[in-house]
Length: 220
Ligand code: C5P
Image 1 (cartoon, protein in one colour):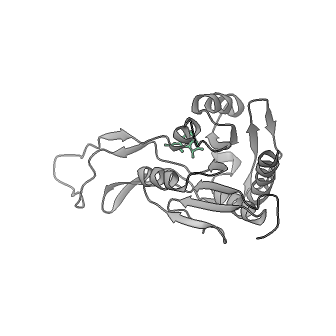
Image 2 (cartoon, rainbow, N blue to C red; image 1 turned 45 degrees about the vertical axis):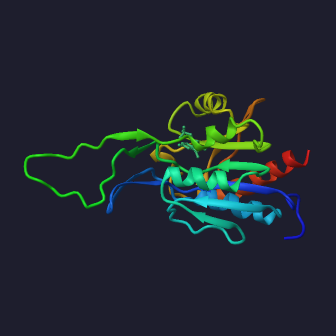
Image 3 (cartoon, protein in one colour; image 1 turned 120 degrees about the vertical axis):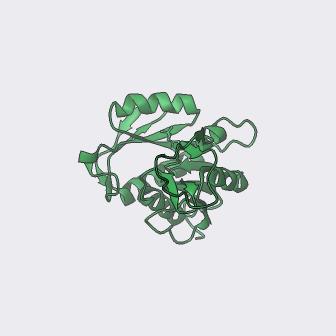
């Protein structure tokens, strides 16, 4: 695109889950369709941004017009993010697995009589916090997502401070909301100044509004 408020701006989006191998056929993952990340990527492209879209194995295809980097694990995602820098804004919509298996097996683990396997876990890097807290070269705008099931705004505000990012897009993913895997989202945009609840709307509309806010902020 040659027009739009984000022409000349480079924006990173992470999306989808990560898969952490247990063995060649099994993995640990979070639930994430990648729908909100794809909707946001599409909206950013529509405003003229150059979008680097780092995605785990999502259900939803990546948007058209982005530079797609496909990854499986959190560590691969972190590397891809580092390679994508510098960017003007970075949005972390991926549902990154908090832990990986310390010693993933090269062979399919077999059921053996009289014993259950024990999986030792290690903590994955916090990709968002790493970028939010970098000194020189930090993107002007660093945005995280928070999926909560209670006290959404409070938890998100605490998360924003802890991670050091500028905004948190928080949503309630309690099963009864139907948000997880659904086409709608109800978010609260938490900034340093306030917490702004948005009405329930399609994930596409959340993407467009968020892209518009990013454009507004980068343009000011
Ligand atoms: O701490 P929590 O996982 O709830 O934080 C969610 C936010 O942090 C999301 O924006 C997610 O993409 C990001 N995150 C990350 N790397 C991790 C864990 C979460 O970038 N290892």
